Length: 245
Image (tube, rainbow, N blue to C red; front, top):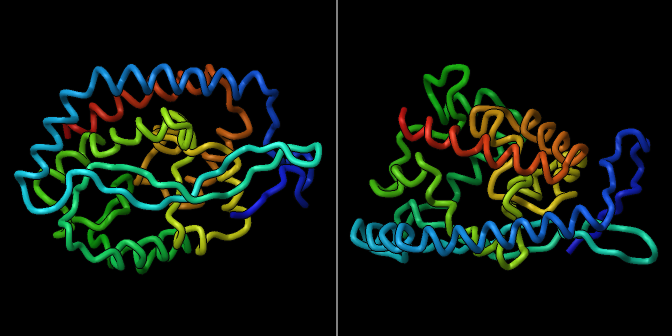
């Protein structure tokens, strides 16, 4: 677990704005109420998804894996963002025996901005298309549909209710992704991770690592309850439009 001070070596004008306690309390209340309501309303849908996954092939319906999150704590008279692991839940979209090293290689190229390697992983990619490898044979039939509609992320509502995530914030990295980060990338962990965020509504998997980090930092510098609500509303048509492609 790593402690990261908000008052680091960066010039004060480049540091994320530090909000009062009221914002964080209001954000937590909003997360708990909305995520709790969505869990209840979407419970039948989630049950159908779980059954479909089990019928599509062997393996559990849920996929639990370790991620790293930022958590705000008050120590020695100042606010710090600490990095700590937590278990994040998703619906399983890959075969149970899928090789995880493929994703590690992809993230190494993505974080480093290695265009040559990314082009090899995604041959024929055009501007505006996803950086992710095309026709990934590890993804199941049901999993492909869930990814397309972002339904595989629904179990993270439980992470939000538990307070490990927020509805809005930067996406949480895997431990090995964090090891690949440059120092300025770590600043995106100066927020509770989210189901969706500014980077997701501005381009999702179609933008590079540096652009994604800059959008996360833009969110951190300007975050408010109104911005969170705006991002949540923008997420809905984006998901629906992707599902209609």
